[in-house]
Length: 595
Image (cartoon, rainbow, N blue to C red; front, side, top):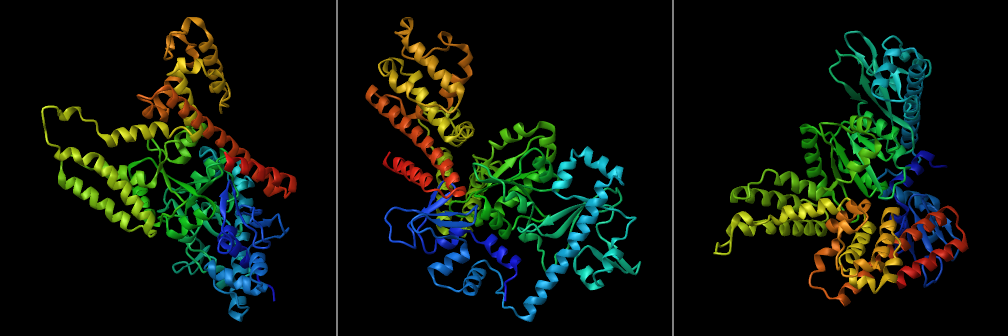
């Protein structure tokens, strides 16, 4: 007997290949892949790779290749049924035993899904037919394009058409009722479409099967603006996310996904090419939802409305999600300005502005800290005590106790940064009004440097060393010329600096003065002087120490470039399992290791 395809697909979607293989093989992350020693041969150099995105493992030394079921069958000599049962248990799915009950459930699912698919197809055709210009006009005002209507298969359920009668030709009353589309109205003694006079948003499973609906009313008299399908045998709101089926296929460098509140937020962000976006389905974020997100993304960004209620909801979400934090996974929070939601923000200000705003996202622990700290009176011991106890209590709730311990240590350190001032013994050298709040200073530095990536900050550091030690680098021009910068502007600045260092009239200058230099680079030089991380450790350093710092940072920049080359090659290898490409990949990895 064959397992249902949907059942096997669900297991594969719930379990990462690295999660299954990692129980047998010690894996190390390399770019988008994992690598380890082959379980099929006795090798000393790792040639066994795992790709979670492609859902396979591949062994270059033996040629073995397959999915999670194949892995258990080949490494543990399981039969296919044994592998399925083992992995189903790991995935939290009931064991499919080919009993009459299992078969009946499978048949119910096929009927349930068929009814929803037929309803969605009908409503979609109704919408794009042009029969309802007022609906299309509303969507046009919301900046929804035809392309997005088709991609998300949006529809419209009119009050004038009774699709229930059409469904009755193929399904019985009970089957239609279990779909959640219709409810029995006692006063009318008939089944009524709960989504009538609403725009329809199909909600799909990981396998792209429709298993729920959302509806947005166009009527001013309806009590609820948005409604969702009731929970059914196959659909639980707290277990699923709108657009996760599509978002999981999106690729982005920082492995992030935006979590928004509404269907329209998802659709309009998608319209601007931001495809890594999902929405919670009218519920507070649950443990199962964040686990589902972490299955595909390491860095979700909670992006709620910028109004007061939206920010209160964000804090509640942070408090609820913080205890679920795991090593190697993060959660960020993004605050939108001017009482805007993601839908209105991206339509008013555009994609580039939105992505620029994303640079201001903050990690969950910092979001919680900042939210709590707003209400703290630094001069009131009771206020500080409540603040500290609140922070400690939240850290104790973290399920991963090791991670919770380090969160607590970090918070305590930050508390200690400002509490000593409360009991400071005054003396003749002490002036209270001149003390700088260390927390605020740290926050300012973090907010500035967080706008730049790792390589940019290291590039700023080497340029900072040159700009502020001109005499030293006049004697070491070749070191400056060897650096490869990430932007054309910094590359041009490097060349201008070299030219400047060679001019006789500036030989007496130890530090660069803007008035003597090309004013085109004024803002860039100011940015470098303000944000270069190295500046805090250069005081009172001699020339030998400055050169050592310069060389160390230069090597780090080269390693960043090398890692990018490795990641690019790993992507090629995952698409084309070629021995030549793999040899090149191993060579680069050895360079990185040896460097």
